[in-house]
Image 1 (tube, rainbow, N blue to C red):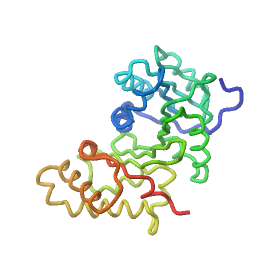
Image 2: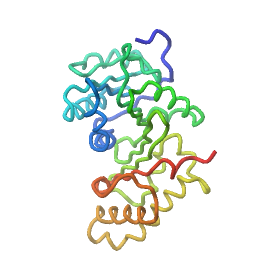
Image 3: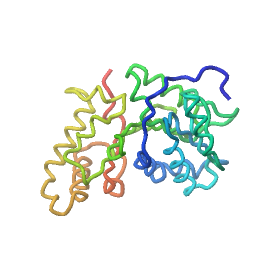
Length: 265
């Protein structure tokens, strides 16, 4: 257990039920192998879960369907939030006080850390240090997911990182509401949101997505899902290093290698 002041700042803490369903679906689907190959019960941390622990409870329920011995630990820097969440503890679900230092029991390292709508409330200059602090505490082969989403979880983005650094950027959108892909820009993670300007790779990526989306307008007669599938396929054909395929695209989700969107020095 941590003996010093938790590392980080108290966030606004707003949340809603089912808000993080998109990233949870990605964790179970694309990243589920990390839980399945873990030796012993895997530990997953929900860092900065907010004023209500509802999304931590949902994460626990979803992950234990994949691997029944998964342990989910909700970590919050606000003692009052931790105290309130304690009433919901049960097998495989616990809550404790802490921050980016990830205060788990001695020798325990998390397989996955989900930090959503946390770093969005920090300065961009603070992101790299927070990433490093968390990644140093991951289990071998572990993953940090730093993301943000709108209030209802209809637009969501996240960066995946391991001990080597950032790996990918994922965008996930409710297709029924999609006007153009770049509308998700206001929900980019803190490391990218202020870089969406001419000359930066993330700006070029979003512009290319919008262009591919516009060019696939004829596919709209077959439905918005078919149009998005065609849009993502066109991006791949143009040489963008996408890390997924149609099974994810049909969900309104597209993931690209971090090297394609990494901010300029």
